[in-house]
Image (tube, rainbow over all chains, first blue to last red; front, side, top):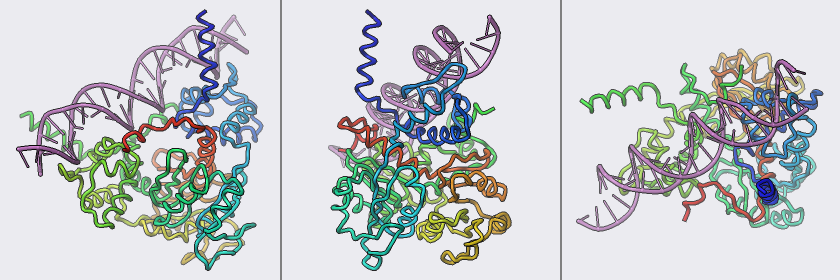
Length: 236
Length: 236
DNA sequence: TAGATTGTTAATCGATTAACAATC
DNA sequence: TAGATTGTTAATCGATTAACAATC
């Protein structure tokens, strides 16, 4: 009787889509990257404590995180790298191609378009846009810089999921609005500007400048006393 | 008597360097950027609830965060933008010049070197390095690409504080080690790779690919039900 | 003055860590 | 078997939020 009820609850949970906590989603790409490395180097198993050591976490956190997925760990061995990689890839959608556009064909925008890393990880750059007439039509790898007037049509036609914002700060919000109006479902903002989006759109900020500012703060305030995050503790 | 004791404690706290919690340090650059905007647009005061609305926080969080600094808020008005900007700038070191080098003169590295945003925020690119003989000596703005053999000397000579890593993933750790050996105190890692550093060195990861993967996850798992973070609540 | 806003304390919430029975 | 490692529950820790007296 009791068992029956428990099973019912479990099924309900599953059908309601597990929805991982933010910190877990944040760490999944790290797990995936590390597990890929391990698999490439021939390792068939990896334990929570190995992963913890490599990523600067505790083994407890690793096990908690992985238990959110449909786990596949085995006592005394750890997790099978092959299975784990599959699982993480599927959860993150890393086994599919995601179509993106870049808005802003300055140094950063063109660099990202040409950078092999995106395509390698399944992010296909389908277009690059700018509003400077002087550069429209210029080649960027296999693409040509398109005018902003074509953004809407292009996003809809190619069913673009994600927009990368690489325009000057002052233009970031307007570009975001236009990308959203065109139908993208997520934005990666590389401009040094606050962008507001409606609830239905996902937003990540690259925070390059902010990261440098944080570094500058940390450097200046780390004079001898190591007030470090807890995760340092476990490493032996 | 009691008051005497309290003052003693306060002084002790101050001399021991306040050392802000991570989430606060993370938000300081946002406050600074927004307060600058406000000041540029002529606003003399800003309230915690305005800042909260603009940055997607609660007013409580804003007041807590700012109270870590040597606050300067005034009842019924809020915070004076001028004073607040000064304070945030000083804490983040945004009023000084920080010397950085870039290692990896590929698309991303050269883009960052040429990108005006860094210098604008006080991060002066003093050198760009690569190990590809084919490009060494090439101009990148006012700089020339230098060979890796010069990295150590250059970092020491110019007293470089921060290194930007823009090499392929496979080379990231070695580059980090060399930068650290040369004496940088902080690293911004733009490679898609896990980098380990000793305790005394600060590390920030740009996580561009990881951010895209997170976006892909969020997009696929946001079908109608808005399990959003708490901070959304307050906005009216 | 009345009312808005701060600075701060206490309550809540959620994430991390510890601990351990189950298991291979 | 003995011992290492998982999955999970409970304890701890820390960050966010609520609430409110003090204040301008």
